Length: 243
Image (cartoon, rainbow, N blue to C red):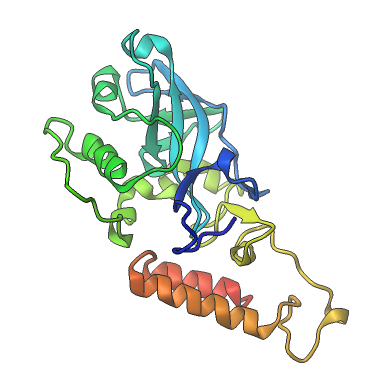
């Protein structure tokens, strides 16, 4: 289901909770892949992906941490790692993270479900200021485009050399497509219409012109709200009109 600010559903949610979403055909699905720390030891495996429903991008990897890497009496063993804070191995089905046993102990555990703003700030604090105590805000504002503009969310860092092999998609496209969302026009799963079905009010892919106008207006609202950057707005608008 596509994201709408007033639909009462969270913007960030686990992929397994989003029945209408699936990983785009030309994007790697890393669920189940082994996660290796900076000390060369296994931390756990990628259990799920945390999806930004508005931009249909992966924001975090949900890592199921092995029992021997945490305290025996710890119930929750999952952590969320920003996608740009990890990197794929060039050849094998492994994910590397710049995290050892000490830094792992500073990470807040993830208990499943929607991801709130305070948890995102805790994760970023654990990465950027590991030796300082986190000061919880009374009401954490939703992360802005500037927050997601950090290198820790740069998917090019995650894919590394696999970008060059054509196994992943450019940064101006989404990681998912949804059969019920107008945003699916941005993903690799878009349907191209037959030219024989085109009318005077349609674009080259068979979509009505008014659909493109509505999409661009929605993107413009997102830009004004600060949820996407100017570069993302330009790229998604071009994608929407088939350029």
